[in-house]
Length: 480
Ligand SMILES: [Zn+2]
Image 1 (cartoon, rainbow, N blue to C red):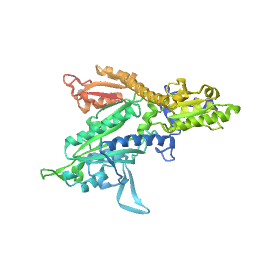
Image 2: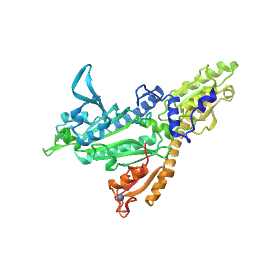
Image 3: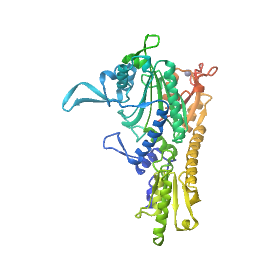
Image 4: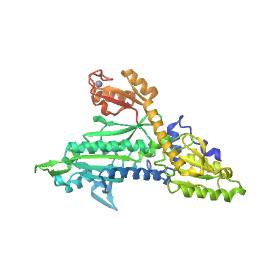
């Protein structure tokens, strides 16, 4: 039984996709709902989301943002106001056409994103330069009718946050877009321990209706990139479509400048993929639902003594950490070890009769399996130190893997070979023409994931596809 629990997960290195689905199911992060493409986020998965929410929300508030909530439904006519926006989202919009048994006069879209309804409200709220900026975020669900789905990474309904801001000038909006991009990068690296690259999307890959889209991209263990968050400069596209105008200091009526930005429950999928191993989840301590598990080990004669000692440890630890005391009698210690390893708890503390005699406990790291004794009087500071080290080392591992799998290609043949044989990011100059971008996509299934800030200028370089003068140095990759 103990053996079985672990053995049924296929090795991560052999079949990432199968491993991913099994780990999510067995660690009870999510389950398939009866409707196609939809999932239930179970308590163990939702607890990770709550930690993500808490840590991100704090950063949004610290930078002046406030939360609000807008309706789930968007009238068809609103969605159609911004031409590129409707074109981009039309294939995946779910529609409500009836209320009870009555046909609606105008169909309502279930929001695929909320620009259309939020901009309609902003057009009422914005009058003067004194009303700006508006810095609103909402935590919500959205629906996109996807054909191919995968838990957390792509589901028909998902949870996210979407920020929607309004500014008086292009510069203010651009500053906001980059501020958020930096928050996303810093958050994903420091809290989720995942290395990301940040940069701008190409015209082809940008958000429908945006002027510019910025992105953070992470590398998954199979060498495919995952878009982990986006921040859009909407320019005046939506303010013109929705009549968001304000009287400026010079008393002239002007269209406002806007941004929108979001990250979703997809971040949970990225965290699972990047850190997990053959035994299950490996969660970064900062977002792990349980950071520490205390497991008492005893024979019948020591039971009372060990259990009360374990209780005492738990009492001390719980002031500082998210800790669970597993004193269940119906399971063996070995079964519990496998169970908590599967669930990715970063630090296990074992205590048995001999440890009590020596006034010590045994620490076992989930990530490295490293096992060592710690004097009881140092329990809390050492646990703190070990958790911080795990957090740091998980990031370092992700960073090293990402850097190792970021390669420059000198010519098109080399780009093809890297994408085919090694995957990862391929760094190369590009002329800026969609034709060359499409050729790479069609022949290699790789897209431009981002144009990094240092790649905005590629003077003197030649496009890796056509050999013409290059405009940018870009990162190509296959992606999720
Ligand atoms: Zn070219």
